[in-house]
Image (tube, rainbow, N blue to C red):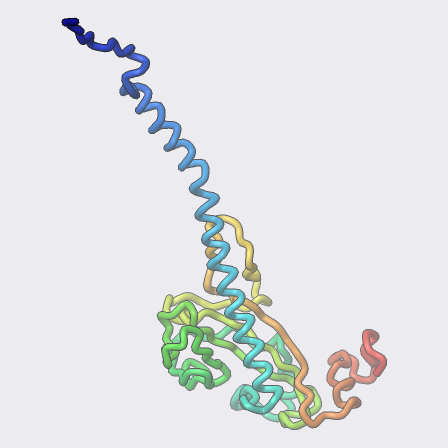
Length: 235
């Protein structure tokens, strides 16, 4: 009968698992890596958020312009308490950014407060237009025709698109023509979250409802010299 003896296997210290020092080194390395990539992650997320906002604003402005062009949306009202001659001279450079105030708006319609040329686009489709929503858009619309104040004669249409929650922050809104105002872009530096003071987009277009080609050309002539045709056109 053979007798077998069991011997305890000797485990070297290098094979017995991570030491405390090795664990600490691993934690430090992981922390350094996380610190290095965290700004990139934050910038990427913030840029995607800003790009989505600009996309929503672009869609809102296109929908509004198409609505005005097809007469499903009424043209924006002209400034009140001005004579016809004053309105004909009231070009885009005279329209300042919207005033702050309580938003009183019907979704997908013009607001009654703080001013009547603001149009609300219900971006989050909740059936309301709220100044606490970052997806609802407020369009400031204005029109200009140096020859006529009647919308049937055609006009130049300008739009500025702001976030609805910009009207809930007690700040002074800006237009791109204002000193120090910066256009918001889809890619932004820093955190990627730009000030809500400036419009997400600002654009102009021509609405030529019922106007002939001569009227269209006449509107494009320089306002300072009506007798001289625009060198960029063949009028």
